[in-house]
Image (cartoon, rainbow, N blue to C red):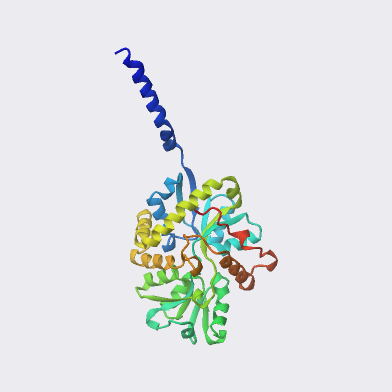
Length: 333
């Protein structure tokens, strides 16, 4: 028995030694990360909740907190001030801020096809750009869609005096179409189209600007430039988890919506959120990136968007810069 004791003690010590590294890894505290969205919850945000529910972020050592936003510009300011780790916003809004000196960069563009659309109730039978002639359109002066609207009309050979417009904020536009003051409104295919459908129960037909060749990059992930140099590993882990989350949402929009509603039951109506999520997925890739993983935008697409910003978006040509000044793919899996 005495001879066996040292052997047993040695074996126990070896076993303890063997499991110690794995145990230590499990106890390692996760990085607390805040993702601030561009707006109140709606369809396009669902993939992040699916990624969190499936443990993609936890597997990367990330404790993710998803916060609603109050507009892309506000979220950009929060990321620039480091009060949010990452932002999910309209990347062209970030580009304008970065051109003026904000320390921001996009680490991946999810919406590579613009969600900008002119939309109305399906019962009005307005399906093509030419059907807009003679109709009344509700717009919000100064927003990104109203800036691209003249170009959309021009490429479709529609003169501004061939349509009527009424002006108002986002809610006023919805009200105008709902009560018949306007036939159509300018909105995002996965946002205003869903709100209009939710409010009335009527199907909505969007006519996308991108289908007429008026395409800008849209929603994507942004980070403070300091984070990219100070903690590149965290950025890579976050983008790896976010890529998996977007892929999972592509495969099952329903699961993504259910994950968001589980986290926040007041996020919307399930059926219409699923419609919006499917419309969101349709914006993830251009023809050129169809076989790429999500977020891998083509720099030509970014370059074209810069051209549009200078021509129609109020960006100073002297601050335009290059696509690589604003978007990097170095942190993508």
